[in-house]
Length: 256
Image (cartoon, rainbow, N blue to C red; front, side):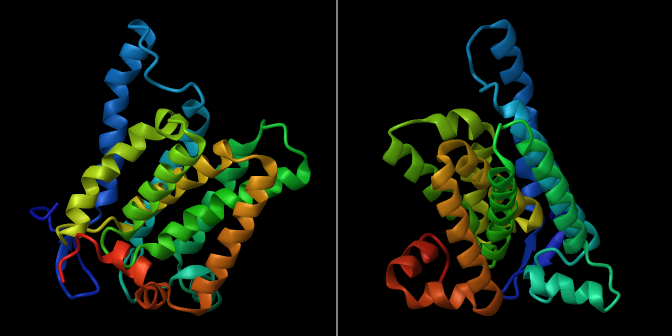
């Protein structure tokens, strides 16, 4: 990535390889080849059949993020962020790849949630939860390693509270690359870009949809909406810095 000139300046003014998210997505897709063969012909039960439903959203949302990274400003500090930023860009007559991404995410979410058997209210709520969870991780992507830590904490929380490996069994092929990517982003060697943060948010959204009950999903939606609205009007980074436990977790492993 560095040799190819794929660089982006981070919040500290350092030029980093970009977007690492494209590499993580490629690693996940490449690993599907041997896993699929062993799963089908070896009878090893390595891939959860439900992954076929959600992979459309995971890959599609990562592609939309790559579009934003390539044609838009991606993770640049000067790029429009949040719903208000992209809406303002559209109203000014500017091409907002973020707005294109939002429309694409809506279409993908409406497609993959179809067939779950939910009533209209539940169906719309699930679509909103999936889209807003994806967007939330995009809002978090302002410091190296923050997105990966949030995703891994979410996965660990569901596994420990439910005493289950279901999230890993379903999405491990996409979660695994983020474990490796964390080393690069924490050490300020690379940036995820919207490709990576979108993919992480999509993984988180799928976990919420598949692991929570209908009531739990509504509660999760309310929480995600509240954090999203907070992020639209306040700085998430400054808030994290003001809360010692969050500040400790956020800065863990990152150069001072």
